[in-house]
Structures are given as C-alpha cells and as structure tokens.
Length: 220
Image (cartoon, rainbow, N blue to C red; front, top):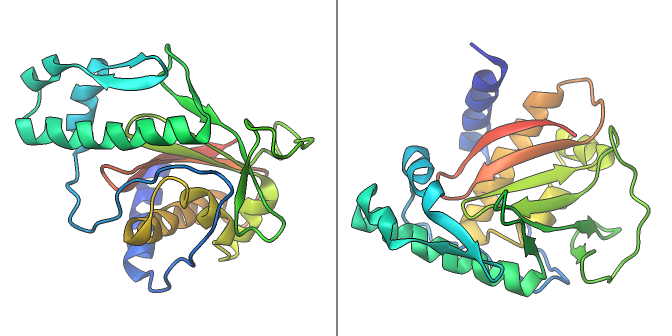
C-alpha cells in the first residue's frame, strides 16, 4: 500500500472518531462559504474530472459550459453549478484572483496571534515577512472544486499535536458548519499521518469539498 493510500485510510479512521466540534471562528475576510447543510449533494471525483475541461475563467469568475451536460447527468451538472456560484462569491468577496491557465484562485491569509481569525494579505490589512521553502506559509488557494491549505511549520506542529484552531480558522472562510468540522478533521489527520514524529517544515493539503475528502498532501 502506497504512502498516500495509508494516509487516506488513517484519515478515514481518524475522522470517524472525531467527536469534538470545531469552535466557531471569526474572520476579517468577508468571504462566502460553501453550503454547510448535511444534505448537500456530493459529487464523485470521477464526475468532477469530467467537468473540469468545461470550467473556464471569464472576468475573474468560474464559468461552467452547458456542453458539460454531455458528460454528466443533469443532477451532477446542477450540483457543480451551485458550487461554482458559491466559489465565485468567495472569489469576489475575498479579493482573490483566478489564474486563467491554472484555474486556481489565490489569496494569501495569515493567522492572527490567537489563531482564531485570518487576515487577507491581498487587501493589505497586514504586512508580514514570510519565510519561504521549508518553514512554509499559512495560506489558502482554491479551484472551483477544492481548496489547497498551506500550513507553516509552527501551525503544522500545532495541528500534529492536536490543536486544530489554526487550520479551523483557515477552513472557516470556505466551508461552514458540520462540513467544516469534517474538513478540519480530515486535514488534521492527514497532516499527522504525513509528518509522523518528524516535522521538517510546512505542509500543504488538498481538500475536495464536493467529495469531502483529502485527495493529496505534501511538504512545502
């Protein structure tokens, strides 16, 4: 079994045992969040892969072509449209910029000292001298169907030790309610499985909010 396969199994077990709710977190970034209803439809990774070529970027917004109906069901198409609308609201409200080539929206965030809120660096609300490479940064970037969460070494150490406040503050800007609890649990357990007892530096984790699972992770 490969390292990520083991990580995925560890994540599933850890999340199933997660019983402590993520605390309510505030943020200085006015961003729309993904719908938190437990009844929200999920979309398989295979369906999302089929849809990806039909998602383009126009005027800093994601646009799903009607031609996508040729490769997925009407229900899957509508689920994707709903999520894209919510993601576009987050793009606009957070001041993020979508790269037309990679289709990834970028906005850097830093955690407050108490790790209960985040501050947008794009809006110039906080100047910071961030180290690069192994130490890493705290930030979030997102695609139309997933977010990539970057945690610097200090935050990674905290998460590996069981303190989820920092990653919870970052996640709260994109996923809310019960889904946020699940996302934080999945990301935290993935970080713990990746770093083990040797924390070399910061890490990154991809969390797919339509499939509700961690799909990849690695060192910064």
